[in-house]
Amino acid sequence: MIQYGLNRSNIDAMHTGDCWAAAKSGRCRPATRQQALDALRRQVRACPHCRPDTALGILE
Image (cartoon, rainbow, N blue to C red; front, side, top):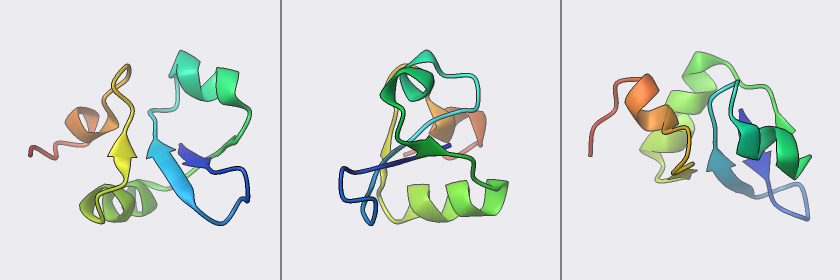
């Protein structure tokens, strides 16, 4: 899931689909696997709770 900023044009973070932090924020929208990979490769912050980068196999 993609978490957008308050202005809805900036991406703040990436989450897995079952992350409690994403559900709590109210600013998340579903993303395809490719969108998630692209965002993480562009250095979008991965949620420290659900670790979508690890789930997708991206290692720093």
